[in-house]
Length: 500
Image (tube, rainbow, N blue to C red; front, top):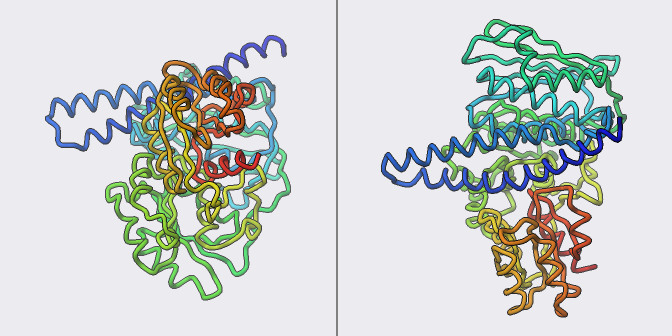
């Protein structure tokens, strides 16, 4: 049976790589269409933009369906892994966020009191099942609201219940729901693990329930820090804010909720003593209609503010507007969407001048530490760097980040232009995208390595895929940076390769 499964798993891995590479230009289409639609254009042109946006979202739907069948643990019957529950749900949220926004759906999240964080179990299966059911609720039931409840009993059984409500159509009978391909996949995955899926109608909604046996892992989580720091969240009460709230409580913070940035600052003034630290975290969704709301936060002497889930386009504008001086960054932090918990915690530690060891749980290790590197090493300032990247949005992101470090970037959009630039100029380092319009990054790297001046120059892979690290190293690259990446990881890749 294992022999039969392995070819299928290889094909699914290929599909996953394909998904990541296609999704990047589709996101660019959506981002640029959104910008263009805000300009003063005639009604027929606006209709064209709406059609482009709908078509691109439909393509994303197909791509998301592909990725759901191409997870790393498909080779294994159980796929047991050690995992954090918050990380798992964060990954699930990232996958369904596009369809949710396209359909104006909303997901809320609740945990039973004292649900542990760390487990050993079929992490990939859980994420797949939750994602497939959520997609079914949005697409087939046209559900406007999805509520996810998570519980864990004393027999080490992790239970998940999704309630789909506010459906635009009458809920079908459970036997009819079970005929849907998405739900059949979920049932098949659960049967493989010796469990079952339960479906019940609830008025004009549907409740999906399943449980899986897991093994709790004894790791620190939720132990208070003294003096207890206070985090005030300005959010939509949706899944993003809930996950940030759970993560902060797990780190030992006292978490409060606020309706606005001003309200959050007043709450912190009342809650935080001289010996405590306080911070406001703002979901960008709350201020998306007034996107300059972050500017007053830099000017006032207030508690630090972190904005998270910032769209890429807006993040580039902010990067261009924020001064490079430490003064302007002392009170405000920014985390681009999709915001990862580690990125948010990194900004929080920077603003509060705390160390990772002060948290009650471990989020950092030598491989994925996100702490900010300040100041920028002197030997990096003034470097001339070649950025080989065909996607214009990604070009702008890398260029803006490098400029913040006083590094001079030169952009090449194809393999041919990259080779021409390398022949005419000398670069201290090269960032290399893998998929280019006229060739691939492997071949370009091999050609550059044939040039005497580039025998030892750092070449750093930039790719959306996580599966081609070996091929990058074999082609002659020194380092591997997967998208999306933070400015800290970008800088660290230069520091690491300069030392090598």
